Length: 238
Image: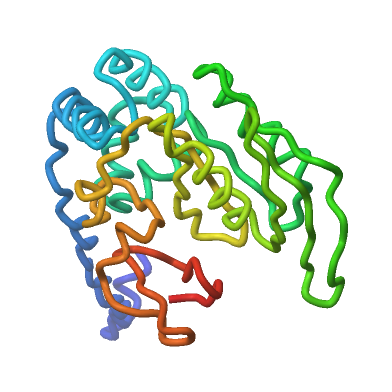
């Protein structure tokens, strides 16, 4: 006899487990459409040329170096959309500029400077640097260009380049300081730079008196520029 006929009692019903509630996965945030990479590169290069930081004939080299540094032109555009002028400023420092570490020697600084000046048939020389005040980090040396010479005391790379730029004024070239967002410094050589076109700081962050149009340093009162990370006079963060 089948077991279900042995009595009137029926086997208890098995409790049913509640069905798990399905929570839909959140939708990814919408991504901004990527502008035409070729147009972005061409526009950025054209503005650099207008400002005197490069020449129109370097457009293809500019594009090639961007692709090498960022992996692709599209990757450059994405970073440029996110970080703005920081992207191109740091690229320029690595492409046609050079970095100077916080602890630097005058010999190394002039080596990098003369590599750029050689294109104009110029060279800056100096005597051996002498320490004047160890506590303040002040050094002294004689710097010369051709028949012109001057004794300078310096603590920062900028103080050296201020003197060199005085020598270079008649040659219509000038070393410009770029923002690095770090303790290191970066400089580049430019012919006839149009600093009024760079004062907005929305393409390249150039740290010069002519681009200091965005207020004053809260520590020393020196004029500052848009997107500057540190004051060029006292080095305080902004």
